[in-house]
Amino acid sequence: MALRTLGAKNAAALDKELMSDGAYSIDQLMELAGLAVSQAVYKFQPPEKGRRVLVACGPGNNGGDGLVAARHLWHYGYQPTMYYPKQSKNELYQRLSKQLKDLDIPFTEDFDSALKQSDQVVDSIFGFSFEGEVREPFPKVIEALRDTRVPVLAVDAPSSWNIENGPPNSGPGKGFMPEALISLTAPKPLVKWFKGRHFVGGRFLSKTVADKYDLDVPPYQGIDQIVEVSTDGQRL
Image 1: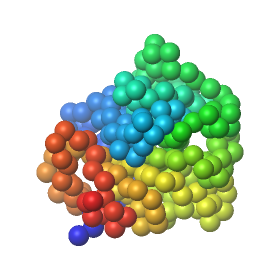
Image 2: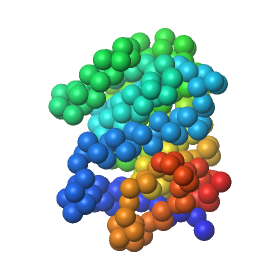
Image 3: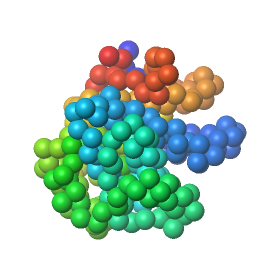
Image 4: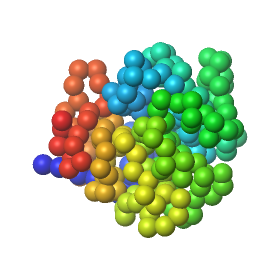
């Protein structure tokens, strides 16, 4: 049986419930998400296959997940480089950025040059709340992700994809199909169109919350925070 999906409206409601009735803080949820992303990177392409990881971060929570993931990746032995052109003034994001700078993780404004020197890319630009047009400076970045031969892992959604309707028919994201995707909390409806390797990370949901939102909790193994599933949602 395929894993049931979580639409944009319910994803926002679930996050709100986790931070109220569930007593989670945004810091905790972002840490759990970023940890899951880092494990997906490790499973997708372990350090011995290339340590140089370019992490492209957007201005919102998806970008925050990328900041957390980069810290864990550094501790795993990777060499992350950050592309974070629209840095948030929010105190949480500033703390996450400082943690990376304290590890001497470089921040770059030249995405194209950094991409040429990378073994893998993490696309944490836009997540489940994205809608509308892609704004500068991200159109050219998404086009570069679409055209590169460097493997790309997308966080929750390939950037520019519509959560409900999948890949765009026009614009910079047309034809963008990353090699891997990690769905956070639960798969989103867009996975119907996704063709690459698919990981799910949500090992914090209670049975009560999962049942309320009609979600399936996949069989995580050992201490793993992620599980790889097929494109139709079956565990591999």
